[in-house]
Each structure stands twice: as structure tokens, then as C-alpha cells.
Image (cartoon, rainbow, N blue to C red; front, side, top):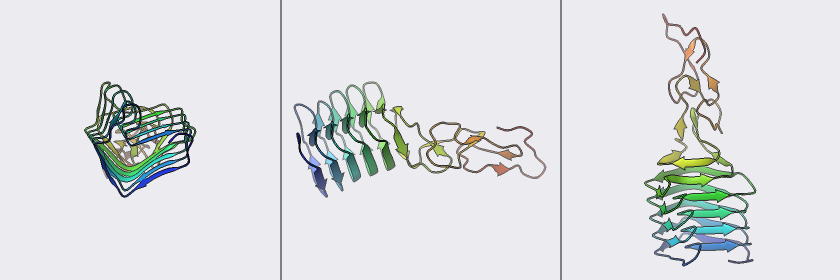
Length: 213
């Protein structure tokens, strides 16, 4: 889609798609939104964006889908998105995708709005530099309380939301949208906080915690 409107694909099985250039399934340049819902996508490939390549376009959404064994030679084994609106990923399993360069699943650069990831798992994805996600645009993660995820940068290995990363021992996280291991702050005096604590627990009878943390 070049200088086109919105692109929508729903309730479909797509396999073995290949682009000699960018966008194994969808190529959007100066176009509207790209919406992929209820898909099973396997073994699709391109130079960039094994499933979706979007540049100077609207929001990209990937909802209620399974994407496995897709690949890019350079950036974004599943999605490569430049200078576009945002990305939304919800209810998606992303399995064994790869990029020879970086971003085995997502490569996001200079997006206009904050992107969001919820109820999504990233498993067995590989890239030349080990990065599952490379994002210089902010991401909002839907994490459980007591959990956190960085809002942008490099994401390596396997992870999922809402499980995310646990707050460090000695700290607690009683709000959502936390982006650092220190979460909401140090455990309060007279309480203890194990790894992944959402609400500080009072010290048991006969014990005390004289300092914070």
C-alpha cells in the first residue's frame, strides 16, 4: 500500500509469504492504519519487516494472533516501523522469529505516539545482536503490580506481559507503568519486600526492619 488508505486483515491464516524488498505480508508507505486481527502467520520473510513494514503511515495494530518463524534480513523479524503513528500489540504469541541484524520481533524508530504491549509473549526469538525488540520510541507495558518493563531501548531474550520483570528485592511496585527495577521505591521501615512485591509486608512479630530498603 503506497499513498493508500487503511489496511485490515482479519481471521486469516498466512504462511510462506516472501517479499524481495520490505514487508512480507504488508508494506505501507505514506498510508493509513494497518490492522491485523485474529491471524496465524508463519514463515513469512522480507528484507525489513518480515510481516509488516510501515513508514510515514498510521498506527499498526497486531491483535489476538500467533506469529511464528517469520524473519527479516535486517530489521524487525515481525514488524519494522519508521516515522509512523504507533504500535499496539495485544493478545499475541510471538515465537521463533528472527532478524539477522536486530529486532527479531520489533524494530521501532521515531514513532509519533506512545506504543502499547499487553498480554503478549516473546519466546525463542533470535537476532544477530540478541535484541528481541529495538525501540527508540516509548512503549507502555501492561504489567502486574510488583512488575516493571523498560519504556524503550533494547529488550533481549524471552519475556512476556503482564508478567514482565519483578521489582528488585527491597523495593515494591504498587502502581502500573513502572519502568525501572526500583519500581515505586524502597521498602518502608518496619516492612519487608521480596522480589516482585506489590505492597510492603509488615515484619512478623518478634522481628524488625530498622531501615528502609
